[in-house]
Length: 352
Image (cartoon, rainbow, N blue to C red; front, side, top):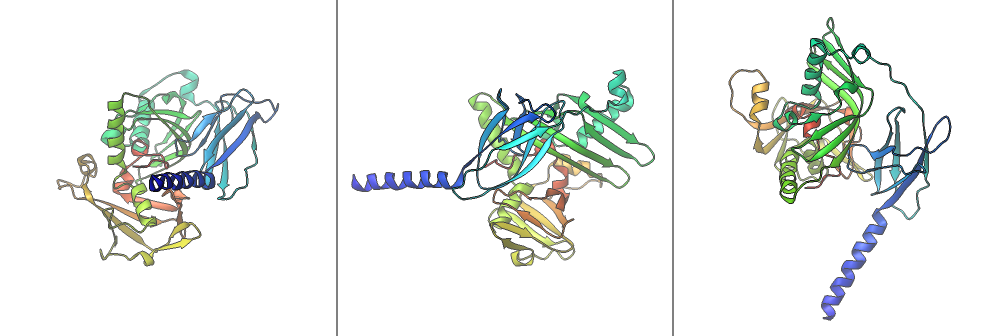
């Protein structure tokens, strides 16, 4: 009994001590920038996560965070959003509350919104946007955009570019992964001539409620999406476990394996990725989805291992402890990962 009691004592000390050192409460208030009146039901969340809440009747909010770097999004229809970076330090100092003053904002209405008319070009733009924003995978095709009228679309025939903004956060249902997504879209550009798409936004994931059997299905499907993803790669790279997790990194031209020290170093508690040219990332445990193979329009070929190419737009990118690229626009994905869009996205606080 003494041994058993000591085991429980050590376990309790470990759990309580770890929780005390790791967690901090982030709290604040949201008010109207002009009147200073508190605003209720404002959405306050950590971007690309399931962490978030709504303000109460005094404009107050709070949630708990692990040490790390985050972007807090404050969003409400009719108001301009605020993106606020914060750093949670691993010490005993309590965080001071933050006061957010959000300005009222009137969105310019596009012609479709004014007339209420949905012509053939509007539907064509919507199809293009959904294909290149939500994605073309089997999971993405089952996603539902609940408020398409929020979109402001413009297609430039001469330049063959589609630009899209939104008058309010997009509401997306992903029944295959079990998430409701609120996506604050800042910009979306599809350039058909040059063959690229780029978008910037701040998503928040809300897990759906369902039966126990449905929840088990979601767990299995999320794991399936995670395995071989860029998130899986980033976490494995940070821990130097690429081979154990099924990844192989090679030079794009020579296909020779690349050692960690050639592109990976560590800065404080973050992993730094830095290299010239491009690298191939091959995931050896899964084959390409047939929908991806057919989408390439390269003639008849068999599916091969999932292969992506990475290159750097910035001089380097950092990976935090959760496996997030801190500046995702600083790294460019081509190949298999470029096929993954919002419909196949998981929140950064997902754990298999």
